Length: 501
Image 1 (cartoon, rainbow, N blue to C red):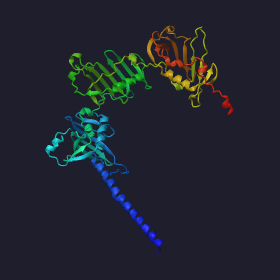
Image 2 (cartoon, helix red, strand yellow):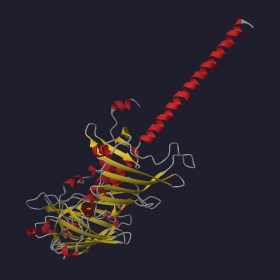
Image 3 (cartoon, rainbow, N blue to C red):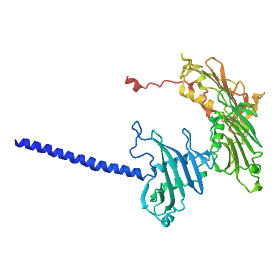
Image 4 (cartoon, helix red, strand yellow):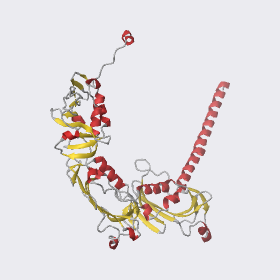
């Protein structure tokens, strides 16, 4: 055998040995360490419902769905259930919705928090007392369904006192004697009373979930309903449009009013608590066909009870709550009126006529007219053109901004309903105005700018409704007085630019 052949065979053998060593290092050492680390991470968690490496039928990670919790803390036992397709609910000692954020924190800690160390494997009674486990600060029992077969798994955790040295909490698991040191966050998550676990939001609806609102108090009474177009209308004491922004804010404020306690509902105390007759009575109809009544009251000043009470009777039955502040729905009906000066849809405006106010000598400027053409599909072009008093391409962005400003203008005070003499408000044919027309040529609405309200920064205006209104028209200074303000002039070609062509 030649020397070169022997050398080559030796190199091949050494490579094979090296590869074997590498494979052993990877599979025999590295993989073993990785599996041990995974097992330790799995076993150290307070609760790992799925077994290590457990998969679903499709090869993915096995699903875990928590179905029940029982928490004993602060001398109370609270049982919670999680029906399929629904949120968490307290089922004992009361029936009520659970606080989603609190439940999310509990379940997160339950699956993510870990035992940091073993403190004692076989503690005696004295040791348990030392760790506070003879009289636990909390006990948590959890049930979960795992995998495609929904196999039931459970855990029981018992918590003692805090280890002030490092902030951990002493804990036992599944009735085993071993005492662990667990991450301190678990104690804060699990040590919850029934009130802590309960949803404090006593009015869980938004304006979009309501179809009717009626409120009666000593000072005010109003009724609002959605019409066939799903728009809110004031029905009592007057019939007119309602202001959606005001209603949305009012209901949002009611939704954000949280209970500070849930005392027992004792009928013989309703009168003392201002609930019979109610100082505030509100009735709501819901989009799902349900309804809710909301009574609120306060004890007489000499009763020594500063609480504000609310008795809410809805889909979950009657609930009595104390509130930190009264519900802010005792409103003057006038505050709920739609304060929009002009009612129109921007995409339906095909023509705008800007009419300037008469000059000091009684003269007038020509009207400025801008229009946009119809598209074959029945809609309107986006671009605008000036058609009078001269023709040219309009500044489309400026026209769009003006329409937005006109559509968002709000009045601050109603001066007079259906006035017979508009002239006293500086509103007549010589006043500055803007008229909007549809593609059919018919006038949609008109805005007329009157004189200044004495002693205020407001002006009298006339809009869609037959009312003299007081409004801040500062944003309307952009309305044009001359066609040059809205016509688009092509940029001039400089000599240098022209020479480069």
